[in-house]
Amino acid sequence: MGPVSRSDLGEEGRLHLAYADKTLVTQIDGLGAASATTPQTDWLTSSATLLTLVVRMLELADIDPGDRVLEIGTGTGTGYFTALLLCHRLGDKNVTSIEYDPDVAAQAAAHLDAAGYAPRLVVGDGLQGHSEGAEYSAVIAPCAARTIPPSCLWQLSDAGMIITTLSGWLLASGLVRLASCVLS
Image 1 (tube, rainbow, N blue to C red):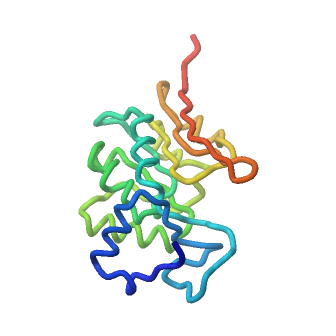
Image 2: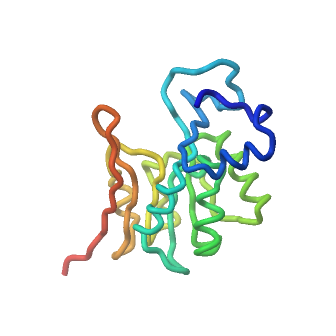
Image 3: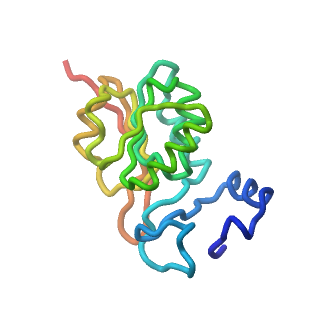
């Protein structure tokens, strides 16, 4: 599928695309999809994550009501993961979400507000986590990472989990679940 404009799809087409089990590119090299007037070939910098991957990450995190979660990458999917899945399951006060891009973060915040959700939203580098909201039962990063940042490890509770995709050579990637443990 090539570039698609909202105006080309109509409401039914947009809903079909939104609920399709596909990763949708929303930004290339900092240029948002809505601003692109021609096909782009630079680096993918933001996308709406594959829905089955989001669900699998939640299953792996094994979170329960009352658990505290840090999500890295609010804006991809306009806060869908944050709002409909995390806030609905855990309650707004137990969800912190961090987004690197201020414009994407503002768009996600507006969508979350319109949906009636008010998690703690942070604009910043997800690789640093968010120590003010720690300790977390889970750190869930639907965005791809090359390494697990130590800051996120230190922000987990004793039985916490980190769930992310690690990317490697030749576009290879894998879903990982790291569990913290306490040595006595």
